[in-house]
Amino acid sequence: LLRLQLGTTNITSRTFQGLDQLQYLFLEHHAPCCLSLSLPPNCLVSLRSLSSLSFQGYCLTYSQSIYLPTSLRHLTMRNSCLTNLQELQRLFPDLLLSASSTPNTKPRALFLEMLDLSYNLQLKQAGVRDLSVLTLHSLILDGTPLRALDLIMSGLLHLQFLSLVGTGITKLPASVTGYSELRALDLGKNKIQNILENGDLPVYKALEFLSLHDNHLQSFPIRFLRTLPQLQKLNLSMNKLGPILELPEGPFITNLKVLDLSHNQLCDVPHGAFSFLSQLQELWLSGNNISSLSNESLHGLRWLRTLDLSWNQIKVLKPGWLYSLP
Image (cartoon, rainbow, N blue to C red; front, side, top):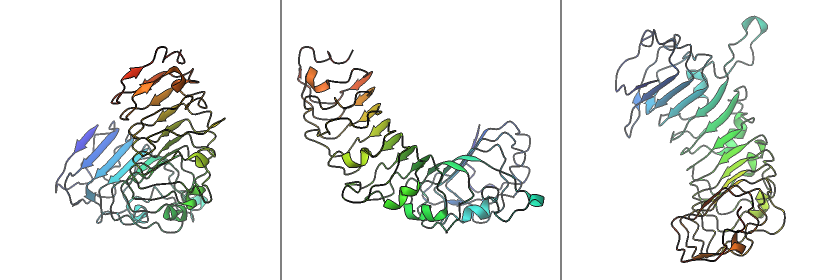
């Protein structure tokens, strides 16, 4: 692993020679404004084992056609002056294979597991089909103003993990329905009050992890969650679901194994509130105003392994309150 805070240092084509075993390379500039960094096209050629490459706080405006090792799996460009996704094609042609290639000019395949473009505050545009040939599992766009609709237009549809933390969105756009293969979706630290409860619902039938932490939810998004048959982990912490927890009755997201309701101003857990979550293994209720618990409050959680009640106002634990939790 090599971490460099370069300042205005120049990088040449020979800077990284001899580092053929290097797996992680971080180039960082921690300042309010990004710093210009020029990279020769072949400066990374010798890094045959490179798995993760990260640029933070650097502007690569004067660089182009940078060679990326085929071993690369994680690429990060945070806090830069990136304005549109099309710039990636100029910087890293290997990422976006040419659709016009012929058998005689077969492009060099590059498979990325993760692309992190977080906190690029000027990233607002994604051209039509810009990313249609990019093979990618995870895309992180935290703190950027790029709209979900723009992502759909870019042609990047086969994601498994999408993170839009702190992007300022107020609802889950219906256009995101194109991501039917998503397994994990993080929409934390936004301004979502409801999830199209009165409109067309997005379809995420493969979704296993959903985070809506630190939003403005005032009620359990029942209708939406009923469309998630594979959901296993649900984070609803730091919302406004209190003072009384109202959960649906009957069979509901029966595969759910982790539920986080921390910091939701909850004062009371009604009898049998979690009885529909027969497979739940972790329940997080910290940072609420719960004052008492009984056996009935936790009824039905026979597979529970972790229960967090820290930072509450608990004064009474009734006899046998853990009887339902073998």
